[in-house]
Image 1 (cartoon, rainbow, N blue to C red):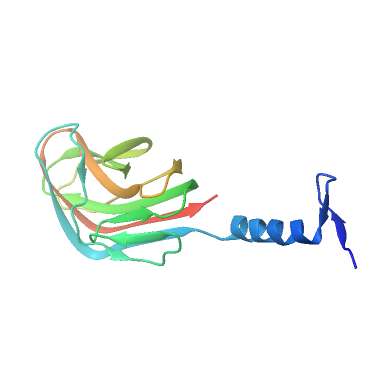
Image 2 (cartoon, rainbow, N blue to C red):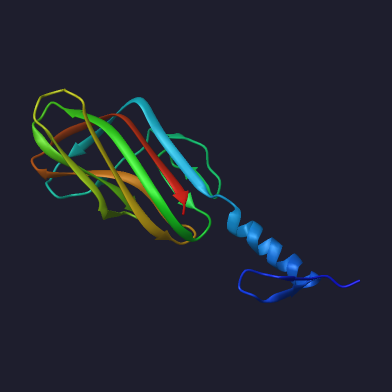
Length: 168
């Protein structure tokens, strides 16, 4: 007995081709995502120079991951190439009044389309900062979160932060 189906594009598929195509569709439907976070983490970052990226050095916790590996207490390693949306947020404070920018960092390079800034105008008061970006990631890309000063130096304290990555 022969089975033939017509796909959306109008092509016909035999049974053997269907098996291959169903495997392909299953692969397309597999969700890939990763997350990491810091809660009451009080991660200290020394900002010694304006416009110098300082990634979070460590202190984060793994969230739920599928298609990503959390490593080094600070980054997510992409295992499957694709287009991903990356969301991040942080609560930060400092004893110094200066303006801080936050970024998604991919392989050590800040991604400007995810940047956001906040002026820490009151000493030791927590401020919220967040951003989003869409990226084409290849396997083994490292995704993390980093900060820099627009002007000024001091110690930045990250009290809370999170990052989620989802394939789109």
